[in-house]
Length: 232
Image 1 (spheres, rainbow, N blue to C red):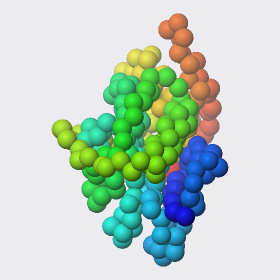
Image 2 (cartoon, rainbow, N blue to C red; image 1 turned 30 degrees about the vertical axis):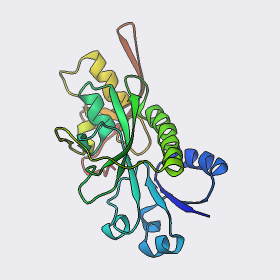
Image 3 (tube, rainbow, N blue to C red; image 1 turned 120 degrees about the vertical axis):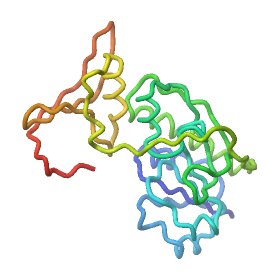
């Protein structure tokens, strides 16, 4: 029986993983922390594929050189290689994109593409978007293990996205109402620094944005902020 590994950190992917293994053939192994992803453990499993949905760590070369590693990215590469794809897309006003399955190589997001699927991000919080993306990603995983599509080299102009820093979650003074809505929702998910406004020694953070009839509403939390506070 064939073996497969899914390496992921986020709850929405772990939930989809639990659904997948109930209906798919083979032996499935979940690695949900960087410490678990060791070459020794992988050598024991001998997987046919290792899948990396929403994996934020560099994959060691000794792993992707020895095994077929598939990563997933939320842009139509080569446009949008790099970090924070959802936030970079929405902040640019790009709401129609692709979810792609890529073969892992040394250069980030530069590997050949197994599959591309349309994906729309004009509405919904980041958490809701990631949940929908996870459903598509695991359907792609199912397709890859069943049909073994051959990956095709990327073509076209390469555009890189920078990884966002926590400071970039602050509102800009020239935001339109639609941009404020987008800014709040694109950061509204676990593990992301929420949209905020600084007011003296306080920080006003916002989630659960809704835009209706030219009126924006959101949940607001106000707390004292220290400049040396650590943010992830």
